[in-house]
Picture 1 (cartoon, rainbow, N blue to C red):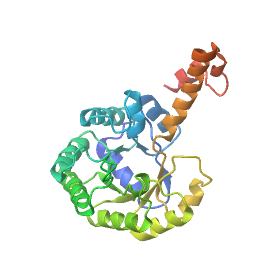
Picture 2: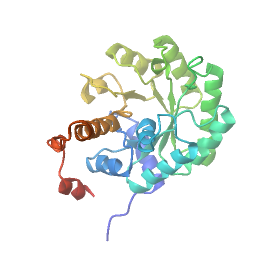
Picture 3: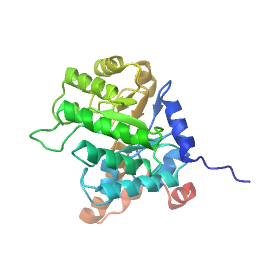
Picture 4: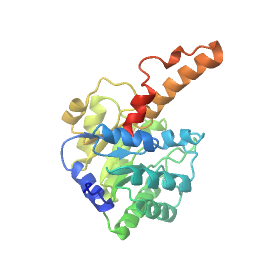
Length: 275
């Protein structure tokens, strides 16, 4: 008999267990094919990427609707046997009650974890005021708890991504999100060892997610030594795929050449064999 595929509860239990000790990489696929390949490589969990998925729809990052996001989550959860963490942007709602409703719907897709950002998308006021950001995260926490409480909640402080690279403010926000019910904390944009160590120490014993979305000298072993619990790559893998595609397509369009398909491009048979 074929092995039983893990159910939603199995995935969620496994996801919480991954956060208890050690350090793991949670890469970011952008569609079913990339998700299945990452699972094939042995990664124990996956995370969606709002930018990577938006680009597959011909949209800018942040341009997808809640319905598109929910459909994407359902598709990835159904296609894989490992826990999926949702890059759920700002919860698709400005008011706490709207965030709560969005999170309720996201939980129903079968995801094992979900992150809520505190960025507004408004350049003039790039971050939600702290009281409101906390209320929005607490609404997400309440929605998860009402569903059974087995989805991991990630609180994100976007300071470094919106032009406010203030470590003190970042830590204050992360600590507030921990108190509001976040199970894991995330400050995308921090890069130096000093920044990473400060965030890990500042929110301990809560686990920390580190984004490495650009070339970095840091290794998994090195960030693990700094106390990081999990490492994600955001849209970096999707950008890598786009880079190869754009180079090859431009050679055809601009020079009439087809040698952009050479190494390290895999053969048709190699890709086909993955599935």
